[in-house]
Image 1 (tube, rainbow, N blue to C red):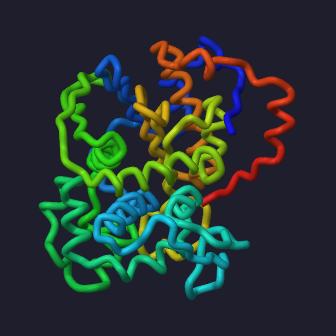
Image 2: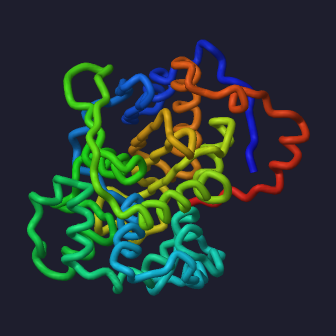
Length: 322
């Protein structure tokens, strides 16, 4: 289902939207023009951050590459069950396949699949997307550190910088490396080819597309004005010891690409406090829409105003949070 909202006011600049949120940072890219723009607290780019649920993108890719899961394999999520196996979504997601697990960021699905990941294979898949992984020990101080640094996406001494995480996600989504190195808030956006498993990449993109239409990025799509997007949200406590809490005062990250087929623009957003689908996701939708409007990237359909019938139909949509 696609839905539309009125165009953002011309005076609503994407930089001001980001700057209005204390500590927020955004990286936006115009892939057609080959330009990247930074907004907000640019110091975040060089900070190590917890990968949070973005790590599920890499896990899903590695699971398919290694033949450890089929895209249609179902796992049942029964929701929050206390200190044992649990998901952030209390009522439970029910039966989910890989794309559904990514769309709803189901912790239970990935908890079941995680033991199937073989260390060396997963590290190799991650290193192909994240060159910073080459600086990490192959087996960082035992199983507990392995689970934290590589599998749960928690903040550790081996966590990547936010900028490096963005490059890794962009490479997975676009199938090529992107480079926005340089000085200043506006930079040239370059790229280079890379070889990825296309079956595994397609499985990840299917989940990211469903996130915008039915999952944790629904509110992002509402603010943007269309669900023709690829998106992934993440909410993570900054300290590994606190990651088992359901406290919503977490750091948030959101990535979004428009349109879903052959993206022309993207946005990566970091917000230091909140719960991503409730706070950072709608903010990312506003930021990307403003950026696309200013750079004339939105197509005519996405510019259309939302009708009252659209609004009525949308009341049946459920917005999940991660």
